[in-house]
Image (tube, rainbow, N blue to C red):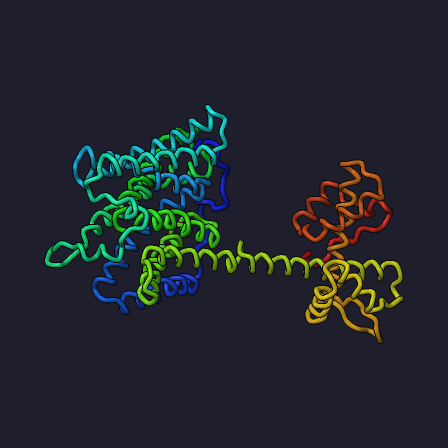
Length: 473
């Protein structure tokens, strides 16, 4: 995976005004209430299982944000599978199932996965996704062979690596200051602390490399070094979580919380917080649902995480299906309203004393956005006192409506003049593009166009350009 070829993603790490207090409180309540319910409804083993799930999921979610931003989600999946030979070799060298040798072996193979993927893609002219699939499946197969042959007499079960036994991890405990703590929790707590420290210490470097690798290189930050440091952290967190939660949950938590957060926010700090909140909710609610339905705990945690992602896909205010549909509807209504106002203004210019039939207004609105949307647009114009019924079956502009219409027509005719001046288009090619763009020309651009054209009085068709009025466009 070439870190220099990743395009800049949507979120930006720059400053922005803070969220309103009520939104922060609502977000905190949405996370804390289900988590508190899950903890209160569980026994001691259940609470330790939830804590272990949170300690495993949050570091994966934090690192996953950078994978998602750099469009390297599949690489996280690849590393989480490909570290299996590193685990096996680390065991053969140390003779221990847990220890530094296992972690270092997994981190080495994780970086090897990224390196081989990049080499195969660059030297072999293989697409990146295909090279990634070849590398991680091959390394995973090598790991299975090493485990089943070289360590056949040792309890190093590939199935355990895949599915995990988080529901039993709390039973294997040891006393720490008089408190029975699961053995796996110490490793995951250390991984969580290490991940937070890694993100904190390398915040500037990770942010800059994620959004603009070329700029990072130009200012002296090695995008390649940061890239492989991130891959090493992903591999280390992955292997730390393998014994407790297995590969399935690790893969889910590396990608799904980050992808969910990516839909809900455009700011990197908030994205990290939202991804962590999704990880916490998935662990707490997933455990309680697994207990209620007597099913796999790790699997249910991954399913809850997927459910939260599906909810974000549908309900995200800006990028969700409902949000985008609402924005499209609002835009259609605005264009339909403005088309009616502009055409009424032109009708007044041509025949000031001649009333406009309401059927014509409905036709103008419907031609812009469809019959139903057109009817709603006319209702909104009446509610805002932009048009009124003067006589039976006729409509006319009010004062505020005329001001609004004047600015629309002014935008239209200024744009026609601009196109005619700078692009030498024939007169019959000016109206259609101007009719589309008039809805997106605000006061600042109108003033700029007027100054650029030396404040013209008429458009290329000889029609008067309305003077600047009080409308806000």
